Length: 346
Image 1: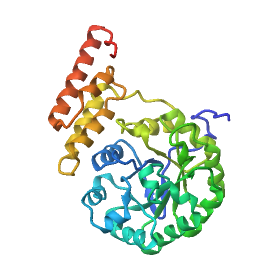
Image 2: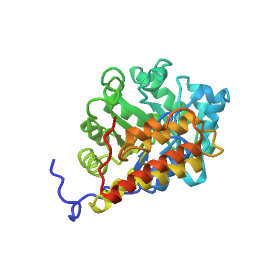
Image 3: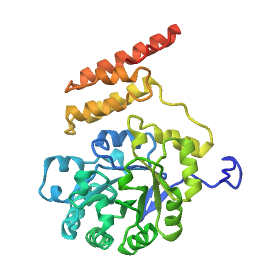
Image 4: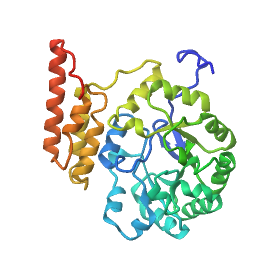
């Protein structure tokens, strides 16, 4: 495909507002839900660095109805991260309907997951396992729409073990009441291997009248531009590319709007983002293992990141995490100022 020039008069407006079921998003870049990482402070960072919509970690309908503490914490949201979506999962129509009623006052949009490839989710018949039973999946979407007034985003993959007829299924989702679809164009069996098939996303976009948000292999401005041009989809959902780098939304938005790249975040900027993450995490119920896991992600792109990740292990308190991270960043800056090369990783 010939991409043309971003500055030409016939170039499509790749960065744009997006309306889903009457909710207008400031742009068409979405933070995907990621277990263990799409927590409240990280969502706030992504929103403030340019995400048009952020999604919570998946919320189990069963756990929510049993008032499980971790589940209740996952559905906590703040005004400053809005617009925000809470994504539920389950297999029973009555349970997912009740869960939708429970969470709708905490979010702007609802989500329903039919794409998670994790074994512990699929063994319950949830996530991508529902794609093996399309009629059951559509009945769950209908149940949610019948229970809640909030717009609903259905999250799906190209199949579970093998590909399904994604166009037919998407049309079924539209009839069932879904207001938008986030489509990761891999099967669950593929996990994150191989390449996402953006031609499948184009076919889906051409087949339905609701917004289709593409997902898979978008990591920066050039890949975002290619994905939008090749598929014609309405927006992009990012997952793994955001880990440790909430600024990726600003990078992509800038390149889509201007055609010019932004530099990668400096070690000092990554430190500042981690400091803000730690500050925001206070009082949110985030435990030390999760704090360490997030801190390790923020080492990406920093010289000597392997040594820094090794230093960030165990259940160390937040103050120690920040101290070790800052010491490493200061050492990197000092070596650069002296014109010294970075020590080789062990």
